[in-house]
Length: 117
Image 1 (cartoon, helix red, strand yellow):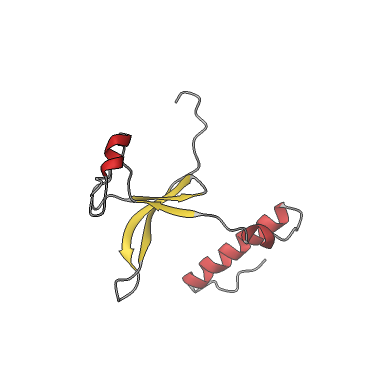
Image 2: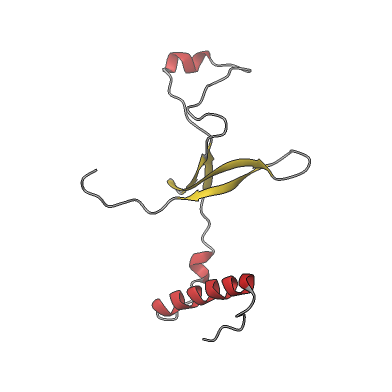
């Protein structure tokens, strides 16, 4: 496969990505991966967590504040189907301040298979 975008770095990156995808198709015997790529996954952004006794939980009401274990400015975890895949910062995605998003700052690698812990 020749690279028609030798001089344009952005186009070159897209071409390399497409080349990688087509080599993945070749690895799977030329099978079309579209059906796999369309599988929906659940994405959650974890701002933090808290632990408390049930008695304290029962006392919570409107206006109660539950302190979380993350501090302001710390990265939040991006979880897909129960596994942390990335970390990022919370950002506002619209001018009217009505929606939040996540700017990814770190992609987490696969879990290590170390037997030593």
